[in-house]
Image (cartoon, rainbow, N blue to C red; front, side):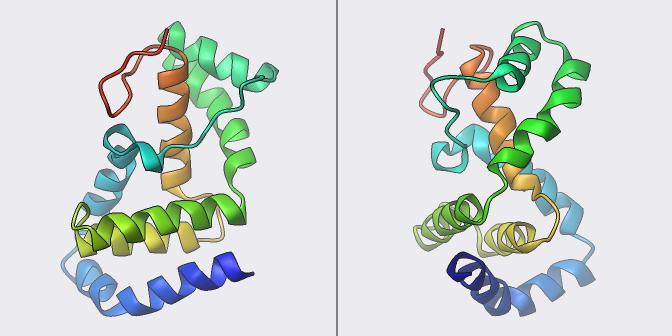
Length: 149
């Protein structure tokens, strides 16, 4: 409950900014930017377990084989495991730190908070899972430039 309250407070504070984004028709632009954040900011990726189960192994194999359809078929099942109140709150706190450190714009942070407050699975969680899996499969570099093999 505390996790959701933190995110709700951030959304409430960002409401005027979110209204302006909607009026200007910029929400889709910011959602696209949001989906790209885990590629550049390691604190916005999820941590895959060291011991992977068959679904995560399937996701990693799909990335390694460059099988986009295979990734799309399995990512939602894996993503749903990471869609927890504590993971949403962890990501929201990371977004708040990045906003306060001027790494993220206030507008992009506002959209991230709104996304993390949604009842259905946030786009940021899916992007975080996709990036972690791509790194784990050795097909994407970490935000620090390392290639995991």
